[in-house]
Amino acid sequence: MATEPWYEFLALPIAPFVLFLQALAFAARRPIVAAIVGVLGFLAIVAMWLYVLYGVDEPASGGANIGAGLLLMEAVIAGALMAAALIRAKPKGARPF
Image (cartoon, rainbow, N blue to C red; front, side, top):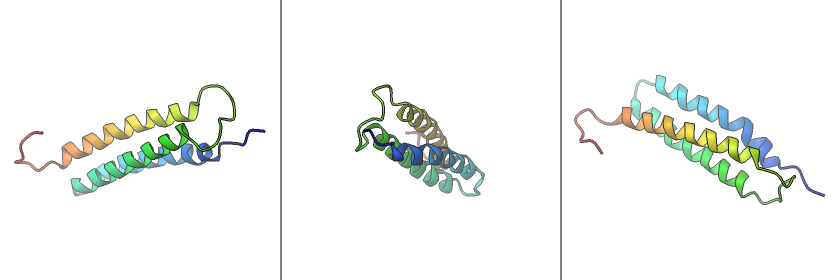
């Protein structure tokens, strides 16, 4: 008998909250705060995605892993927010990458 994927039930509601915190960090006075929150949020969502994708349990059904697909989409959004925060946090006189 297959067990329920508890890690999906935990990761799927937390990931949008992390995205919300990343977007909310843009309101911080110091851009470095948004950059730090952006990097940490991206790493957290990628860790959730990897754990759901390669979970310790067998999939409950033999079909597609919809939770991993949803977390991948959220990781892409988090990556875009992280990139925007890092670009915004770059010092004014610094050379481009």
